[in-house]
Length: 109
Length: 447
Image 1 (spheres, rainbow over the protein chains, first blue to last red):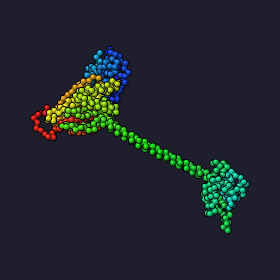
Image 2 (tube, chains in turn purple, brown):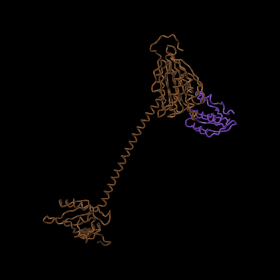
Image 3 (spheres, rainbow over the protein chains, first blue to last red):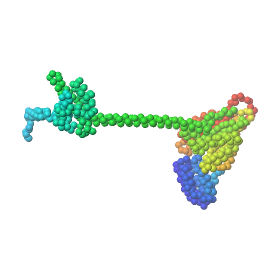
Image 4 (cartoon, chains in turn green, orange):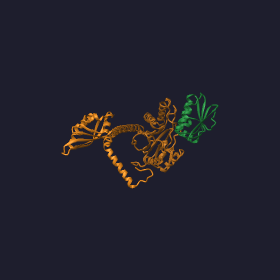
């Protein structure tokens, strides 16, 4: 049980590949990472969840924090390659219509 | 004396040993008196010293000439010793003819503050006519013994002190424990009072409706993040809600409290489920998210209205990010009551909530639950959760069931999860009794 975050930069903005668990113990890691992420107005931050094993309410809170941070600087946030299970949880709490969600890992553009 | 090389004969050997002992004894009588390892002195009956040995003179640092015939025994003693001699020693000696092992202090040239602790024994020697002639006295140096006694005394005082300190510490610890118990009691009372503000202590009696709840808090301080309520909103209508705030413990409890009272107040103003959740959303967003500390909850809010005269109850529910409620029908079927599209309450300034509707006939039961139930771990990994499908299957197994029956069955199920139940869990079941108190033949069909 761990969480690793790898970053690469696409044309539209940074892409964070999150691998492992977004749970009570590890979600704060993502939040800390986001706090130090320099994001410019008009950029699109993509969080790639293809490697996500587990996501609980703490993880969803972290994703909401990412969205809020992006919006605060006039940037955008998209989730990509959301695992079916996590997508179902997002649907239950109505967040599937709040987050911009891409099906694949390319990050859209 | 043997010569070297000469075998000692038995006779020769015993003779020379005997001779050596005799010489030793003859030689030592005077020497023993003078150099004995204790002090000797003889005094006249008035105490004047007539004879004193070298050992005692040495201890006292005195010359024989300055003592014999010039000093009395009492003159050798310290002031305290003299006093004791006058009041006890001398009278006792006169009375008994002898005293043994009396502790006195003599004046010494050096040593411990010029004082020599001694043990003194005296015996009166009588003449042939029985008249007392002189006093023979032995003096034993008791410095070691005295220091041993002093040491004993010091140790005893130390032990006394340690015991007193331990007693003090024990008293302090007991006082601290009593204080801690009082504090804990106060805290428990405060928590109980706070907990009472989060969920009703008992459900109200709703005419024509049966209700049952289960409430479990995972937090050791027993403040939950789950909440529910059931209350009248006028016009014979009743409102209910059940939900789950994000987080656990006291912070969650404060959010729970705000949520509960906001929903109750909103419902009195407008009991439409979507409207109540919209008010809660605005309040939470303004209170937390706008202040930079976003918090949210999921909630189901419902409104109960009597439908006709046959006991049927019209239920309208709206959900904000909450799992769908479950309906157990009198005919043994069961199904989720979907409330799609409801957003977590409090995360966005504007949120819309959709309302679903059903009718509960006699024997029908509506079950609301928090995800503590569906996310209870049923296996070794956190992937093995009880889940929606298992809940639906469980309901199908038990339907038809009244509120109390289904809550009891679920309570048994939850207890069986043991440590797997690591989240707050709230269950609320509302149903129309299957057996009407005054059954009226009905021509209506159940929906």
